[in-house]
Length: 193
Image 1 (tube, rainbow, N blue to C red):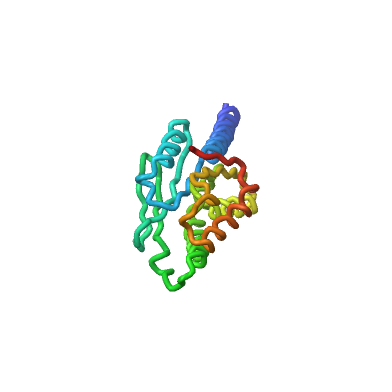
Image 2 (image 1 turned 90 degrees about the vertical axis):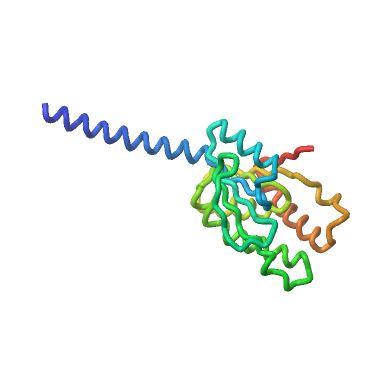
């Protein structure tokens, strides 16, 4: 009958909408933004982490930064993952002789330029690497949570910053201040020896 056909079409549409919502939730649950402040290509730990996650069904977006003075954002695929490599702001932040001040400006620049891409990715997980990425993970997790997103922050400590004897004291203090402020906001912390 016509009524049965109409009911079937309505049921099919409802099922399609529900399936789309389930897919969206599944995709959101399996989305990772991984942040490391290098050009990613030569960072074995980051590449292996991304490849392992992708093998297990996660969608991974890598955010990196040129080590040299590139001034353009580059989009690429690295190890099968979507990657964005951002300009290194030190090319235009060289006026200060105080490295810690340059560091704070670098962090502010990267927070501002990366935020759009983090928000668009709508990650369930933010995975930061190295001490450089701590303030970015802290800020992005805080912002996403304030917008109502369920996001978890994992940080991989690659270095023991208090043990560095080659850093300028003011820069080391700035890095340690970022770590002290952020360490309790991290959902998981780990290191590789």
